[in-house]
Length: 190
Length: 387
Image (cartoon, rainbow over all chains, first blue to last red; front, side, top):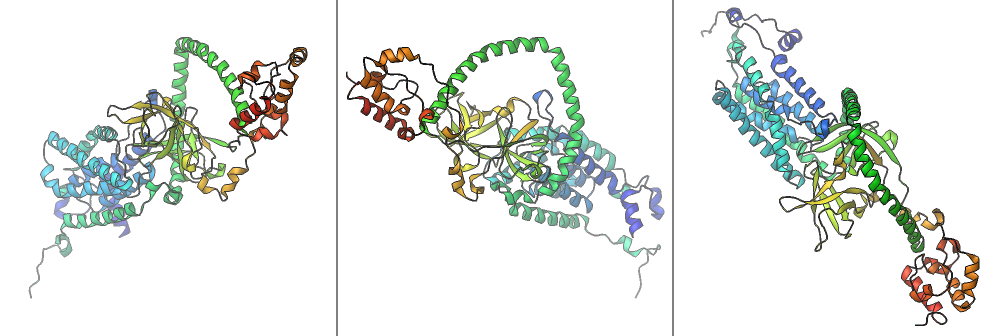
């Protein structure tokens, strides 16, 4: 069991699938499309939190786990992805000093909606996907604002919310890259 | 019974779980855990217990961010060196102008400081408690609309405790909300959970400065009175509630396009890199509130102020025609400040009075200035205070 799990998670050697073995040009494991992007997202968050103000300006603070919460359910529903996404949310709660569970809850709600809506989105032109991404951001940051207002009794500055949403939007190419690379890469994902 | 065979003896491979619903079960589980965490979190109340559970994470994240920020700091230092090199001439011109302006203020400051020390003696004010400071470097910052925090590389090993105010050379930055041995978390004044009691220096009006995630400006709420705030007024901490000491510079008042008063933070004038943690004890943390009253009076600590020189010969000449007035004035030397308060007695030829420090045994030195004035006038009126 242990070698199988290890092979399934980290190794790219094709499994013995009998007749279907020839159909799969390459086996995509969770490391490729879940764990590695999660680590990159985590690293990007830490690096962009560096106390460095070039020319007096602050570094952008995108919510990079939102990119994964959008891309993962579209690539494939997974049992591992919700746990990893929850872990990223808790990391943001601790690292950014937000109320515990704040980012986790909002990210999971985005993931849940997109799991149901994936069949309507995959296969569309990138402009359509980008439009859905903007809509997702609107809902996500709106939800964050409402939850924070209820939790603290103070409404966050809406222009600041827009700034963070804009910084996150700039990373949409990463979403498109993940989808292009992994959506059709493994026949088991179909 | 007939058994169904798929020909490869892998019966379970053809069993398919309803994937979407199973994943939704996992999502629901994580959502429930997150919701319970959110409901149980009390960080909005800014209490030490609410942040205690984060200290382990902070102590791990601090060194990581410190290591990441090290090359960035080096690059920044190199950039600053280049800037200094290329812009030295223009900067020199600006600095010359500023020095000329500030030298005027320096003279004024010296005069006011001397006058202030005299008033403090006359009022017999108690000194503010001594406050040590700890310097630290900011290693991580979150500046989004939902949380404004910083990690600094100094913690409980250096004596930092929950609630300590954090300042820069410009002004107030925030306060300590999480402490681990080597790292502390600073709640910025711009955070949505931050509420700082402040006052307007010009009018002494009180207000509450609330953060809303704006990195440069904070809201000024509950401003009372007409014309109590004007654009450009300096905002200081009021010390109300005992969370912050009184008089820390915060910023200046501006009016937003939405008509809301805001504070342009002084701390935003320059990048917040090095900060000072003021080891100020929140009043509520003091075991015995009476310790606040044990601070010694100013007159026991400060040296006596410089006195103007008086020529003894001119004093002797001036005392000769009006001995009664001189006697009455010297009877209560501490009552009259350096500036004349009574036209009648000051226009007389009596010598300039001595400050309170010179006559610590004087009973009137403990009186408020109004009472002291009255006693002076009463004692001098029979002889010298003729209209």
